[in-house]
Image (cartoon, rainbow, N blue to C red; front, top):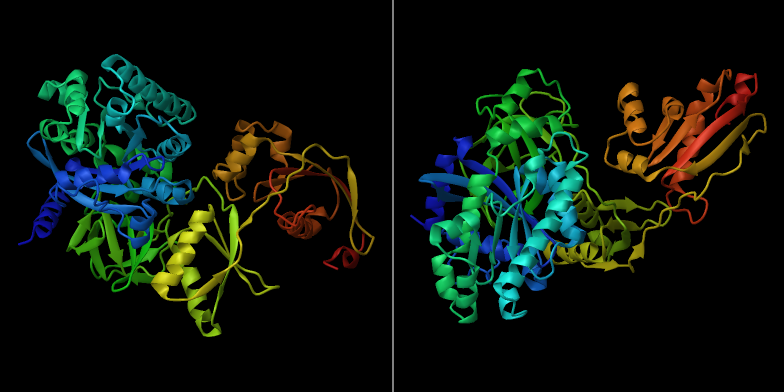
Length: 601
Protein backbone atom coordinates (compact mmCIF):
# COMPACT_ATOMS: atom_id res chain seq x y z
CA UNK A 1 0.00 0.00 0.00
CA UNK A 2 1.45 3.38 -1.06
CA UNK A 3 2.13 6.19 1.39
CA UNK A 4 -0.51 8.41 -0.22
CA UNK A 5 -3.15 5.68 0.10
CA UNK A 6 -2.34 5.35 3.81
CA UNK A 7 -2.72 9.11 4.31
CA UNK A 8 -6.06 9.09 2.46
CA UNK A 9 -7.32 6.26 4.70
CA UNK A 10 -6.19 8.13 7.82
CA UNK A 11 -7.95 11.30 6.55
CA UNK A 12 -11.15 9.28 5.98
CA UNK A 13 -10.94 7.94 9.52
CA UNK A 14 -10.58 11.43 11.03
CA UNK A 15 -13.30 13.07 8.91
CA UNK A 16 -16.11 12.11 11.26
CA UNK A 17 -14.67 13.91 14.24
CA UNK A 18 -15.09 17.66 13.63
CA UNK A 19 -13.35 18.53 16.95
CA UNK A 20 -10.09 17.30 15.43
CA UNK A 21 -10.46 19.00 12.04
CA UNK A 22 -8.76 22.28 11.11
CA UNK A 23 -9.61 24.07 7.85
CA UNK A 24 -6.90 26.62 7.10
CA UNK A 25 -5.59 28.86 4.32
CA UNK A 26 -2.05 30.18 3.90
CA UNK A 27 -2.15 33.77 2.65
CA UNK A 28 0.43 36.52 2.11
CA UNK A 29 1.91 39.19 -0.14
CA UNK A 30 3.50 37.83 -3.32
CA UNK A 31 6.89 36.10 -2.80
CA UNK A 32 6.77 36.04 0.99
CA UNK A 33 7.10 32.24 0.89
CA UNK A 34 3.63 30.63 1.17
CA UNK A 35 4.18 27.76 -1.27
CA UNK A 36 7.66 27.00 0.14
CA UNK A 37 6.05 26.87 3.61
CA UNK A 38 3.30 24.55 2.29
CA UNK A 39 6.04 22.22 0.99
CA UNK A 40 7.47 21.97 4.51
CA UNK A 41 4.07 21.12 5.94
CA UNK A 42 3.53 18.42 3.28
CA UNK A 43 6.97 16.96 4.04
CA UNK A 44 6.20 17.05 7.78
CA UNK A 45 3.00 15.11 7.09
CA UNK A 46 4.99 12.56 5.06
CA UNK A 47 3.44 13.46 1.70
CA UNK A 48 6.57 14.60 -0.13
CA UNK A 49 10.25 13.92 0.45
CA UNK A 50 11.98 16.09 3.07
CA UNK A 51 14.97 16.61 0.75
CA UNK A 52 13.03 18.31 -2.03
CA UNK A 53 10.68 20.31 0.23
CA UNK A 54 11.02 24.02 -0.39
CA UNK A 55 12.21 23.54 -3.96
CA UNK A 56 9.53 21.16 -5.23
CA UNK A 57 6.69 23.73 -4.78
CA UNK A 58 4.25 20.83 -4.75
CA UNK A 59 1.21 23.10 -4.45
CA UNK A 60 2.04 24.91 -7.71
CA UNK A 61 0.48 22.13 -9.73
CA UNK A 62 0.20 23.82 -13.14
CA UNK A 63 3.11 24.15 -15.57
CA UNK A 64 2.75 27.91 -15.92
CA UNK A 65 2.94 28.32 -12.12
CA UNK A 66 6.25 26.44 -11.99
CA UNK A 67 7.57 28.44 -14.97
CA UNK A 68 6.63 31.85 -13.55
CA UNK A 69 7.52 30.90 -9.99
CA UNK A 70 4.25 32.23 -8.57
CA UNK A 71 1.01 30.65 -7.39
CA UNK A 72 -1.89 31.36 -9.75
CA UNK A 73 -4.64 29.02 -8.53
CA UNK A 74 -5.48 28.21 -4.93
CA UNK A 75 -4.50 24.55 -4.32
CA UNK A 76 -6.04 22.24 -1.70
CA UNK A 77 -4.47 19.43 0.26
CA UNK A 78 -5.60 17.31 3.22
CA UNK A 79 -3.02 15.98 5.68
CA UNK A 80 -2.79 14.60 9.21
CA UNK A 81 -0.72 15.80 12.18
CA UNK A 82 -0.37 14.40 15.67
CA UNK A 83 -0.71 17.02 18.42
CA UNK A 84 -0.89 16.16 22.15
CA UNK A 85 -1.27 12.43 21.33
CA UNK A 86 -4.30 13.04 19.10
CA UNK A 87 -4.23 12.84 15.32
CA UNK A 88 -5.73 15.92 13.61
CA UNK A 89 -7.00 16.28 10.04
CA UNK A 90 -5.78 19.51 8.45
CA UNK A 91 -7.39 20.71 5.21
CA UNK A 92 -5.06 23.35 3.82
CA UNK A 93 -5.51 25.80 0.93
CA UNK A 94 -2.39 27.47 -0.48
CA UNK A 95 -3.56 30.79 -1.98
CA UNK A 96 -1.92 33.11 -4.54
CA UNK A 97 -0.15 36.27 -3.31
CA UNK A 98 -0.17 38.27 -6.54
CA UNK A 99 -2.79 41.03 -6.46
CA UNK A 100 -4.21 39.92 -9.85
CA UNK A 101 -5.37 36.63 -8.32
CA UNK A 102 -6.92 38.10 -5.16
CA UNK A 103 -10.28 36.58 -6.11
CA UNK A 104 -8.89 33.12 -5.30
CA UNK A 105 -7.98 34.30 -1.80
CA UNK A 106 -11.47 35.70 -1.16
CA UNK A 107 -13.07 32.44 -2.29
CA UNK A 108 -10.67 30.30 -0.24
CA UNK A 109 -11.53 32.27 2.92
CA UNK A 110 -15.18 31.17 2.61
CA UNK A 111 -14.10 27.51 2.96
CA UNK A 112 -11.75 27.84 5.96
CA UNK A 113 -11.86 28.85 9.65
CA UNK A 114 -8.26 29.98 10.12
CA UNK A 115 -5.73 31.94 8.04
CA UNK A 116 -1.98 31.56 8.50
CA UNK A 117 -0.67 34.95 7.35
CA UNK A 118 2.96 34.81 6.20
CA UNK A 119 5.11 37.97 6.31
CA UNK A 120 8.67 38.40 5.06
CA UNK A 121 10.91 39.43 8.01
CA UNK A 122 12.91 41.84 5.81
CA UNK A 123 10.06 43.45 3.85
CA UNK A 124 7.53 43.49 6.70
CA UNK A 125 3.75 43.90 6.21
CA UNK A 126 3.03 44.89 2.59
CA UNK A 127 -0.14 46.13 0.79
CA UNK A 128 -1.27 42.60 -0.07
CA UNK A 129 -0.74 41.54 3.57
CA UNK A 130 -3.37 44.12 4.49
CA UNK A 131 -5.69 42.87 1.74
CA UNK A 132 -5.50 39.20 2.76
CA UNK A 133 -6.12 40.13 6.42
CA UNK A 134 -9.18 42.12 5.41
CA UNK A 135 -10.42 39.22 3.26
CA UNK A 136 -9.98 36.84 6.22
CA UNK A 137 -11.69 39.03 8.83
CA UNK A 138 -14.61 39.84 6.52
CA UNK A 139 -15.33 36.12 6.30
CA UNK A 140 -14.95 35.66 10.08
CA UNK A 141 -11.69 33.71 9.70
CA UNK A 142 -9.17 33.82 12.58
CA UNK A 143 -5.60 34.91 11.70
CA UNK A 144 -2.24 33.75 13.08
CA UNK A 145 1.14 35.04 11.92
CA UNK A 146 4.27 33.34 10.62
CA UNK A 147 7.30 35.57 10.02
CA UNK A 148 9.36 33.94 7.27
CA UNK A 149 12.92 34.47 5.95
CA UNK A 150 14.34 35.21 9.42
CA UNK A 151 17.60 33.67 8.12
CA UNK A 152 18.04 36.78 5.93
CA UNK A 153 18.18 39.01 9.01
CA UNK A 154 21.14 36.94 10.27
CA UNK A 155 23.05 36.16 7.08
CA UNK A 156 22.35 39.23 4.93
CA UNK A 157 21.68 42.03 7.41
CA UNK A 158 24.03 40.62 10.08
CA UNK A 159 21.65 41.58 12.89
CA UNK A 160 22.27 40.63 16.53
CA UNK A 161 19.63 39.21 18.89
CA UNK A 162 18.55 42.68 20.13
CA UNK A 163 18.12 44.25 16.66
CA UNK A 164 16.43 41.12 15.40
CA UNK A 165 13.86 41.07 18.18
CA UNK A 166 13.10 44.77 17.66
CA UNK A 167 12.53 44.21 13.94
CA UNK A 168 10.29 41.17 14.53
CA UNK A 169 8.27 43.03 17.19
CA UNK A 170 7.76 45.90 14.74
CA UNK A 171 6.32 43.44 12.17
CA UNK A 172 3.99 41.96 14.81
CA UNK A 173 2.74 45.37 15.94
CA UNK A 174 2.11 46.42 12.30
CA UNK A 175 0.01 43.31 11.73
CA UNK A 176 -1.89 43.82 15.01
CA UNK A 177 -2.62 47.43 14.11
CA UNK A 178 -4.16 46.22 10.84
CA UNK A 179 -6.25 43.58 12.67
CA UNK A 180 -7.45 46.09 15.29
CA UNK A 181 -8.37 48.68 12.68
CA UNK A 182 -10.43 46.16 10.70
CA UNK A 183 -12.07 44.43 13.67
CA UNK A 184 -13.37 47.77 15.05
CA UNK A 185 -16.24 47.87 12.56
CA UNK A 186 -17.07 44.16 12.88
CA UNK A 187 -19.30 43.42 15.87
CA UNK A 188 -18.95 39.63 15.79
CA UNK A 189 -15.15 39.44 15.65
CA UNK A 190 -13.60 38.85 19.09
CA UNK A 191 -11.25 41.66 20.11
CA UNK A 192 -8.55 39.18 21.15
CA UNK A 193 -7.84 38.10 17.56
CA UNK A 194 -4.61 40.09 17.59
CA UNK A 195 -1.51 37.88 17.47
CA UNK A 196 1.17 37.64 20.16
CA UNK A 197 4.39 35.74 20.82
CA UNK A 198 3.34 34.87 24.39
CA UNK A 199 0.08 33.23 23.28
CA UNK A 200 1.93 31.20 20.67
CA UNK A 201 -0.03 32.73 17.74
CA UNK A 202 3.21 33.98 16.15
CA UNK A 203 5.86 31.72 14.63
CA UNK A 204 9.28 32.64 13.19
CA UNK A 205 11.52 30.75 10.84
CA UNK A 206 12.83 30.07 7.38
CA UNK A 207 10.69 28.03 5.01
CA UNK A 208 13.62 27.60 2.63
CA UNK A 209 15.90 26.08 5.29
CA UNK A 210 13.01 24.24 6.99
CA UNK A 211 13.41 25.50 10.58
CA UNK A 212 10.94 27.40 12.73
CA UNK A 213 10.33 28.48 16.32
CA UNK A 214 7.49 29.81 18.45
CA UNK A 215 7.26 30.54 22.17
CA UNK A 216 5.83 27.04 22.99
CA UNK A 217 8.48 25.34 20.82
CA UNK A 218 11.30 27.31 22.46
CA UNK A 219 10.05 26.21 25.87
CA UNK A 220 9.89 22.61 24.63
CA UNK A 221 13.31 22.49 22.92
CA UNK A 222 15.15 25.01 25.12
CA UNK A 223 16.36 26.97 22.05
CA UNK A 224 16.45 30.76 21.97
CA UNK A 225 17.38 33.37 19.35
CA UNK A 226 21.03 33.29 20.46
CA UNK A 227 21.29 29.56 19.61
CA UNK A 228 19.57 30.13 16.28
CA UNK A 229 21.98 32.93 15.33
CA UNK A 230 24.98 30.75 16.29
CA UNK A 231 23.79 27.76 14.24
CA UNK A 232 22.75 29.93 11.27
CA UNK A 233 26.12 31.74 11.23
CA UNK A 234 28.01 28.46 11.56
CA UNK A 235 26.05 27.26 8.50
CA UNK A 236 24.59 24.36 10.52
CA UNK A 237 21.15 24.71 8.99
CA UNK A 238 20.54 20.96 8.88
CA UNK A 239 21.10 20.74 12.63
CA UNK A 240 18.74 23.68 13.08
CA UNK A 241 16.09 21.87 11.01
CA UNK A 242 16.54 18.66 13.04
CA UNK A 243 16.33 20.38 16.41
CA UNK A 244 13.30 22.54 15.62
CA UNK A 245 11.57 21.43 12.38
CA UNK A 246 9.32 24.08 10.85
CA UNK A 247 6.41 21.73 10.09
CA UNK A 248 5.99 20.70 13.76
CA UNK A 249 6.01 24.31 14.97
CA UNK A 250 3.46 25.49 12.39
CA UNK A 251 1.14 22.48 12.54
CA UNK A 252 1.14 22.56 16.38
CA UNK A 253 0.17 26.24 16.15
CA UNK A 254 -2.63 25.34 13.70
CA UNK A 255 -4.00 22.57 15.96
CA UNK A 256 -3.83 24.66 19.11
CA UNK A 257 -4.94 28.11 18.00
CA UNK A 258 -7.28 27.69 15.04
CA UNK A 259 -10.94 26.95 15.77
CA UNK A 260 -12.39 23.59 14.74
CA UNK A 261 -15.65 23.58 12.73
CA UNK A 262 -17.73 23.02 15.91
CA UNK A 263 -16.37 26.28 17.40
CA UNK A 264 -16.26 28.22 14.15
CA UNK A 265 -19.58 27.46 12.44
CA UNK A 266 -21.91 28.94 15.09
CA UNK A 267 -20.02 32.22 14.65
CA UNK A 268 -19.51 32.06 10.88
CA UNK A 269 -22.93 30.90 9.70
CA UNK A 270 -24.86 34.08 10.75
CA UNK A 271 -22.13 36.12 9.05
CA UNK A 272 -22.48 34.44 5.64
CA UNK A 273 -26.08 33.21 5.67
CA UNK A 274 -29.21 35.36 5.97
CA UNK A 275 -31.74 32.51 6.27
CA UNK A 276 -34.06 31.76 9.21
CA UNK A 277 -31.80 31.40 12.28
CA UNK A 278 -34.49 29.39 14.12
CA UNK A 279 -34.85 26.73 11.41
CA UNK A 280 -33.67 23.14 11.68
CA UNK A 281 -31.25 23.79 8.81
CA UNK A 282 -29.57 26.62 10.76
CA UNK A 283 -29.28 24.31 13.77
CA UNK A 284 -27.69 21.56 11.60
CA UNK A 285 -25.07 24.04 10.33
CA UNK A 286 -24.33 25.39 13.81
CA UNK A 287 -23.88 21.88 15.22
CA UNK A 288 -21.94 20.62 12.15
CA UNK A 289 -24.51 17.80 12.02
CA UNK A 290 -23.36 15.10 9.59
CA UNK A 291 -26.82 13.46 9.69
CA UNK A 292 -28.64 16.71 8.80
CA UNK A 293 -29.64 18.03 5.38
CA UNK A 294 -26.72 18.54 3.01
CA UNK A 295 -25.43 22.13 2.76
CA UNK A 296 -22.33 22.60 0.58
CA UNK A 297 -20.82 25.93 -0.46
CA UNK A 298 -18.82 25.82 -3.71
CA UNK A 299 -15.72 28.04 -3.50
CA UNK A 300 -13.77 26.86 -6.53
CA UNK A 301 -14.42 25.30 -9.94
CA UNK A 302 -11.60 23.66 -11.88
CA UNK A 303 -11.38 21.59 -15.04
CA UNK A 304 -9.92 18.10 -15.11
CA UNK A 305 -9.33 16.67 -18.62
CA UNK A 306 -10.58 13.23 -17.45
CA UNK A 307 -13.16 13.91 -14.74
CA UNK A 308 -14.59 17.10 -16.25
CA UNK A 309 -15.64 19.93 -13.98
CA UNK A 310 -14.61 19.63 -10.32
CA UNK A 311 -16.35 21.73 -7.67
CA UNK A 312 -14.45 22.24 -4.41
CA UNK A 313 -15.97 23.75 -1.29
CA UNK A 314 -16.96 23.51 2.36
CA UNK A 315 -19.55 21.06 3.70
CA UNK A 316 -21.46 22.97 6.41
CA UNK A 317 -23.97 20.25 7.24
CA UNK A 318 -24.98 16.72 6.16
CA UNK A 319 -22.75 14.23 4.35
CA UNK A 320 -21.85 14.24 0.66
CA UNK A 321 -22.14 10.84 -1.03
CA UNK A 322 -21.89 9.63 -4.62
CA UNK A 323 -25.25 9.50 -6.43
CA UNK A 324 -26.99 12.16 -4.30
CA UNK A 325 -29.35 14.50 -6.15
CA UNK A 326 -28.85 18.07 -4.96
CA UNK A 327 -30.26 21.53 -5.70
CA UNK A 328 -27.91 24.27 -6.92
CA UNK A 329 -29.07 27.76 -5.87
CA UNK A 330 -30.47 29.85 -8.71
CA UNK A 331 -30.96 26.96 -11.17
CA UNK A 332 -33.88 24.69 -11.91
CA UNK A 333 -33.86 20.93 -11.36
CA UNK A 334 -31.28 18.86 -9.51
CA UNK A 335 -27.68 17.80 -10.20
CA UNK A 336 -26.45 14.30 -9.44
CA UNK A 337 -23.07 13.82 -7.69
CA UNK A 338 -20.88 11.54 -9.77
CA UNK A 339 -17.96 11.26 -7.35
CA UNK A 340 -16.81 12.65 -4.02
CA UNK A 341 -13.14 13.16 -3.19
CA UNK A 342 -10.35 14.98 -1.40
CA UNK A 343 -7.62 17.03 -3.02
CA UNK A 344 -4.04 16.02 -2.44
CA UNK A 345 -2.31 18.90 -4.26
CA UNK A 346 -2.55 18.06 -7.95
CA UNK A 347 -4.10 14.62 -7.40
CA UNK A 348 -7.71 14.05 -6.45
CA UNK A 349 -8.43 10.96 -4.35
CA UNK A 350 -11.98 9.56 -4.46
CA UNK A 351 -13.54 8.62 -1.13
CA UNK A 352 -16.91 7.11 -0.23
CA UNK A 353 -18.31 10.11 1.65
CA UNK A 354 -17.36 13.50 3.10
CA UNK A 355 -19.24 14.62 6.26
CA UNK A 356 -19.88 18.16 7.56
CA UNK A 357 -16.94 20.31 8.65
CA UNK A 358 -14.66 19.18 5.80
CA UNK A 359 -13.49 20.58 2.48
CA UNK A 360 -14.61 18.28 -0.34
CA UNK A 361 -14.24 18.13 -4.11
CA UNK A 362 -17.08 16.66 -6.16
CA UNK A 363 -17.94 16.05 -9.81
CA UNK A 364 -21.37 16.17 -11.41
CA UNK A 365 -22.50 19.66 -10.34
CA UNK A 366 -22.76 20.97 -13.89
CA UNK A 367 -24.88 24.03 -12.93
CA UNK A 368 -22.64 25.20 -10.08
CA UNK A 369 -20.33 28.21 -10.32
CA UNK A 370 -17.81 29.49 -7.75
CA UNK A 371 -20.10 30.85 -5.02
CA UNK A 372 -23.09 28.52 -5.51
CA UNK A 373 -24.96 27.01 -2.57
CA UNK A 374 -25.65 23.28 -3.07
CA UNK A 375 -28.17 21.55 -0.80
CA UNK A 376 -30.50 18.56 -0.44
CA UNK A 377 -33.51 20.83 0.27
CA UNK A 378 -34.35 24.19 -1.26
CA UNK A 379 -32.91 26.89 1.01
CA UNK A 380 -31.88 30.54 1.23
CA UNK A 381 -28.46 30.59 -0.49
CA UNK A 382 -25.34 31.83 1.30
CA UNK A 383 -24.38 35.48 0.83
CA UNK A 384 -22.55 35.85 -2.48
CA UNK A 385 -18.77 36.00 -2.13
CA UNK A 386 -17.91 39.70 -2.35
CA UNK A 387 -14.73 40.33 -4.32
CA UNK A 388 -13.06 43.52 -3.15
CA UNK A 389 -11.64 44.55 -6.53
CA UNK A 390 -13.30 45.03 -9.91
CA UNK A 391 -11.80 44.21 -13.33
CA UNK A 392 -9.51 47.07 -14.39
CA UNK A 393 -7.99 45.90 -17.68
CA UNK A 394 -9.66 44.65 -20.86
CA UNK A 395 -8.30 42.73 -23.85
CA UNK A 396 -9.98 41.54 -27.02
CA UNK A 397 -9.63 37.83 -27.83
CA UNK A 398 -10.40 36.33 -31.22
CA UNK A 399 -9.88 32.88 -32.70
CA UNK A 400 -7.29 32.69 -35.50
CA UNK A 401 -9.42 30.17 -37.41
CA UNK A 402 -13.16 30.70 -37.77
CA UNK A 403 -13.71 26.96 -37.13
CA UNK A 404 -12.48 27.43 -33.55
CA UNK A 405 -15.05 30.13 -32.76
CA UNK A 406 -17.70 27.88 -31.09
CA UNK A 407 -14.98 26.21 -29.00
CA UNK A 408 -13.56 29.62 -28.00
CA UNK A 409 -16.97 30.90 -26.87
CA UNK A 410 -17.46 27.71 -24.83
CA UNK A 411 -13.98 28.07 -23.27
CA UNK A 412 -14.59 31.73 -22.39
CA UNK A 413 -17.87 30.77 -20.68
CA UNK A 414 -15.96 28.11 -18.74
CA UNK A 415 -13.30 30.67 -17.73
CA UNK A 416 -15.99 33.01 -16.39
CA UNK A 417 -17.50 30.11 -14.45
CA UNK A 418 -14.16 29.14 -12.87
CA UNK A 419 -13.11 32.71 -12.03
CA UNK A 420 -15.90 35.18 -11.16
CA UNK A 421 -13.39 38.08 -11.11
CA UNK A 422 -13.13 37.75 -14.91
CA UNK A 423 -15.81 39.45 -17.02
CA UNK A 424 -16.54 38.24 -20.53
CA UNK A 425 -18.48 40.48 -22.88
CA UNK A 426 -19.35 40.13 -26.55
CA UNK A 427 -19.49 43.55 -28.16
CA UNK A 428 -22.54 43.39 -30.40
CA UNK A 429 -21.40 46.24 -32.65
CA UNK A 430 -17.97 44.83 -33.51
CA UNK A 431 -18.46 41.13 -32.70
CA UNK A 432 -15.33 41.25 -30.53
CA UNK A 433 -14.94 39.05 -27.46
CA UNK A 434 -13.76 41.27 -24.62
CA UNK A 435 -12.21 39.76 -21.53
CA UNK A 436 -11.68 41.98 -18.45
CA UNK A 437 -9.57 41.04 -15.44
CA UNK A 438 -7.64 42.28 -12.41
CA UNK A 439 -4.44 43.08 -14.28
CA UNK A 440 -2.24 42.33 -17.28
CA UNK A 441 -0.78 39.17 -15.73
CA UNK A 442 -4.29 37.87 -14.97
CA UNK A 443 -5.35 38.20 -18.64
CA UNK A 444 -2.01 36.91 -19.93
CA UNK A 445 -2.34 33.72 -17.85
CA UNK A 446 -5.93 33.15 -19.01
CA UNK A 447 -5.13 33.63 -22.71
CA UNK A 448 -2.01 31.44 -22.41
CA UNK A 449 -4.14 28.67 -20.86
CA UNK A 450 -6.71 28.93 -23.67
CA UNK A 451 -3.85 28.44 -26.16
CA UNK A 452 -2.02 25.66 -24.30
CA UNK A 453 -4.77 23.67 -22.56
CA UNK A 454 -7.58 24.00 -25.09
CA UNK A 455 -5.34 24.12 -28.16
CA UNK A 456 -7.15 27.12 -29.62
CA UNK A 457 -4.81 29.56 -31.43
CA UNK A 458 -6.04 33.04 -30.41
CA UNK A 459 -5.06 36.60 -31.31
CA UNK A 460 -5.24 39.08 -28.44
CA UNK A 461 -5.45 42.85 -28.71
CA UNK A 462 -3.44 45.34 -26.66
CA UNK A 463 -4.66 45.59 -23.05
CA UNK A 464 -6.80 48.70 -22.44
CA UNK A 465 -7.30 50.21 -19.00
CA UNK A 466 -10.93 50.42 -17.92
CA UNK A 467 -11.95 53.93 -16.86
CA UNK A 468 -14.81 55.16 -14.68
CA UNK A 469 -16.49 58.58 -14.68
CA UNK A 470 -17.74 60.51 -11.66
CA UNK A 471 -19.12 64.00 -10.96
CA UNK A 472 -16.63 66.10 -8.96
CA UNK A 473 -19.01 68.67 -7.46
CA UNK A 474 -22.69 69.48 -7.13
CA UNK A 475 -24.34 70.65 -10.36
CA UNK A 476 -26.94 73.36 -10.85
CA UNK A 477 -30.54 72.25 -11.44
CA UNK A 478 -30.88 71.08 -15.04
CA UNK A 479 -34.12 70.79 -17.02
CA UNK A 480 -34.45 67.62 -19.08
CA UNK A 481 -37.19 67.26 -21.72
CA UNK A 482 -38.77 64.13 -23.12
CA UNK A 483 -38.31 63.72 -26.90
CA UNK A 484 -41.91 64.86 -27.56
CA UNK A 485 -41.33 68.10 -25.53
CA UNK A 486 -44.44 67.45 -23.40
CA UNK A 487 -42.73 66.32 -20.18
CA UNK A 488 -40.04 68.10 -18.16
CA UNK A 489 -37.79 66.86 -15.35
CA UNK A 490 -35.60 68.95 -13.02
CA UNK A 491 -32.50 67.13 -11.81
CA UNK A 492 -29.23 67.82 -9.94
CA UNK A 493 -26.22 65.52 -9.60
CA UNK A 494 -23.51 65.43 -6.90
CA UNK A 495 -20.72 63.02 -5.87
CA UNK A 496 -21.64 60.30 -3.36
CA UNK A 497 -19.49 59.95 -0.24
CA UNK A 498 -16.90 57.16 -0.33
CA UNK A 499 -18.44 55.43 2.71
CA UNK A 500 -21.76 55.02 0.88
CA UNK A 501 -20.01 53.77 -2.29
CA UNK A 502 -18.11 51.21 -0.16
CA UNK A 503 -21.33 50.08 1.53
CA UNK A 504 -22.96 49.48 -1.90
CA UNK A 505 -19.88 47.61 -3.19
CA UNK A 506 -19.74 45.38 -0.11
CA UNK A 507 -23.43 44.52 -0.54
CA UNK A 508 -24.43 46.23 2.73
CA UNK A 509 -26.90 48.42 0.80
CA UNK A 510 -29.04 47.21 -2.11
CA UNK A 511 -32.53 47.52 -3.58
CA UNK A 512 -33.23 43.87 -2.65
CA UNK A 513 -33.22 44.71 1.07
CA UNK A 514 -36.33 45.59 3.08
CA UNK A 515 -36.74 49.38 2.94
CA UNK A 516 -36.21 49.92 6.66
CA UNK A 517 -32.93 47.97 6.68
CA UNK A 518 -31.68 49.84 3.62
CA UNK A 519 -32.55 53.19 5.21
CA UNK A 520 -30.63 52.31 8.39
CA UNK A 521 -27.61 51.05 6.43
CA UNK A 522 -27.47 54.27 4.37
CA UNK A 523 -27.75 56.43 7.49
CA UNK A 524 -24.95 54.42 9.11
CA UNK A 525 -22.80 55.13 6.05
CA UNK A 526 -23.43 58.86 6.51
CA UNK A 527 -26.54 59.74 4.44
CA UNK A 528 -28.99 62.12 6.08
CA UNK A 529 -32.36 60.80 7.20
CA UNK A 530 -34.59 62.63 4.67
CA UNK A 531 -32.46 61.59 1.68
CA UNK A 532 -32.31 57.94 2.77
CA UNK A 533 -36.14 57.77 2.88
CA UNK A 534 -36.50 58.79 -0.78
CA UNK A 535 -34.17 56.31 -2.52
CA UNK A 536 -35.83 55.31 -5.76
CA UNK A 537 -33.10 53.23 -7.36
CA UNK A 538 -29.49 52.07 -6.96
CA UNK A 539 -27.65 51.28 -10.19
CA UNK A 540 -24.04 50.04 -9.78
CA UNK A 541 -22.79 52.59 -7.21
CA UNK A 542 -25.16 55.39 -8.25
CA UNK A 543 -28.31 56.41 -6.40
CA UNK A 544 -31.44 58.20 -7.59
CA UNK A 545 -33.39 60.17 -4.98
CA UNK A 546 -37.00 61.20 -5.63
CA UNK A 547 -37.40 64.58 -3.88
CA UNK A 548 -40.66 65.47 -5.67
CA UNK A 549 -43.87 66.15 -3.72
CA UNK A 550 -47.37 65.18 -4.87
CA UNK A 551 -46.81 64.95 -8.62
CA UNK A 552 -49.61 63.14 -10.40
CA UNK A 553 -48.78 60.20 -12.71
CA UNK A 554 -45.09 60.23 -11.72
CA UNK A 555 -45.25 56.58 -10.59
CA UNK A 556 -46.40 55.57 -14.11
CA UNK A 557 -43.42 57.21 -15.82
CA UNK A 558 -40.81 56.39 -13.15
CA UNK A 559 -39.88 53.11 -14.82
CA UNK A 560 -39.08 54.95 -18.06
CA UNK A 561 -37.03 57.55 -16.15
CA UNK A 562 -34.98 54.76 -14.52
CA UNK A 563 -34.38 53.02 -17.84
CA UNK A 564 -33.12 56.24 -19.37
CA UNK A 565 -30.92 56.96 -16.37
CA UNK A 566 -29.37 53.48 -16.35
CA UNK A 567 -28.59 53.72 -20.05
CA UNK A 568 -26.88 57.09 -19.51
CA UNK A 569 -24.88 55.71 -16.54
CA UNK A 570 -23.55 52.70 -18.48
CA UNK A 571 -22.22 55.06 -21.19
CA UNK A 572 -20.98 58.13 -19.36
CA UNK A 573 -21.01 61.62 -20.94
CA UNK A 574 -17.21 62.15 -21.03
CA UNK A 575 -15.77 59.02 -22.60
CA UNK A 576 -18.70 56.55 -22.77
CA UNK A 577 -17.23 54.76 -19.72
CA UNK A 578 -19.47 53.62 -16.82
CA UNK A 579 -20.38 56.28 -14.24
CA UNK A 580 -19.86 55.52 -10.55
CA UNK A 581 -20.45 57.23 -7.20
CA UNK A 582 -23.09 59.74 -8.37
CA UNK A 583 -26.16 60.91 -6.43
CA UNK A 584 -29.03 62.14 -8.62
CA UNK A 585 -31.92 64.11 -7.19
CA UNK A 586 -35.20 64.48 -9.05
CA UNK A 587 -36.53 67.80 -7.66
CA UNK A 588 -39.59 68.38 -9.79
CA UNK A 589 -41.39 67.08 -12.89
CA UNK A 590 -44.06 68.52 -15.22
CA UNK A 591 -45.99 65.75 -16.91
CA UNK A 592 -48.61 65.94 -19.68
CA UNK A 593 -52.19 65.14 -18.57
CA UNK A 594 -52.75 62.87 -21.51
CA UNK A 595 -51.54 59.26 -21.03
CA UNK A 596 -50.60 58.91 -24.67
CA UNK A 597 -48.07 61.78 -24.37
CA UNK A 598 -46.50 60.20 -21.27
CA UNK A 599 -45.85 56.80 -22.88
CA UNK A 600 -42.52 55.29 -23.96
CA UNK A 601 -42.51 57.42 -27.13
